[in-house]
Length: 353
Image 1: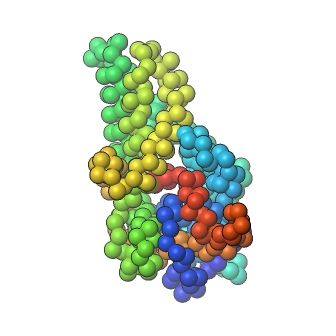
Image 2 (image 1 turned 180 degrees about the vertical axis):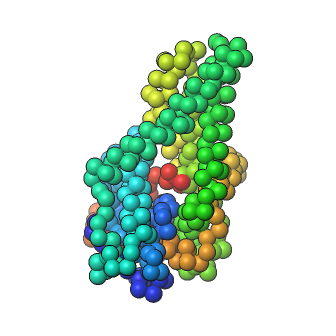
Image 3 (image 1 turned 120 degrees about the vertical axis):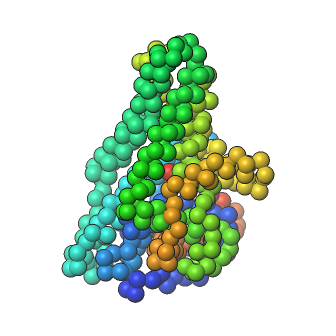
């Protein structure tokens, strides 16, 4: 980890002057007592520790993933970016957990935790999370739909079965989110999720990044990872309905094999709709995605907003501090170049959540 800093008064760390407003696609996620923000070149995690201070960790992103040729290939870029985003999310959660539960005297002189889980631990958690998600939201709905197919005598009707399977998948997703959302700790997590959205909405609107100003902005954002999950469910119904009638085992295999295809399509759909919110039809199509975010966000308090702003401003500061990039005979500051790299930013599982 390259850069960490501590705001001793618990408020947003003083940062350099904000760059000229650009249509940069920033994203992020809520973590334990904090927020992770990501641009096209850097990631920053801000967490409020038990002493009330804000600990901020900032590090560069892999340019091969977020700025290379792969990031410009439709559909394929979604898979690589989503996989890396999952790893970054787990890494950020581990960092936040260490900061949030640390006891006084257990940190270094700069306030950062003594260690951060990385390497095998991080990727083992990624693999475990992915496996659990596939089992719960893809394999289980397929078994339930197969049972309903037998019970109702719907064999040989793939459209009806795939619709039922999609509705079961959606019900499980909504039920899971609703259930965990009733836990006190998760309610706070959803508050930080709301703070992340409000901060990005404020930046994209050109507003001042202060808690009082950011608080006026919406909880919803079209690039949220929650919107991505709903898009996956809907697109899976359409894709699976193109398949012929299948027995249970081939049907399960088809779900697993086509999952990367569905994820890639959902990523491109979310990316396209987020970039065309001025279109009335696009706004209509994304209304269910925005409505779903009401399950995963809560109104943040001013302290939560201060943490989200701290993470976001550190991403901006890091990206401005990098060497300028030459385009022909013109030297363009990195903050401006990052705008052109917006295509390399996924929603966050986002995504957006």
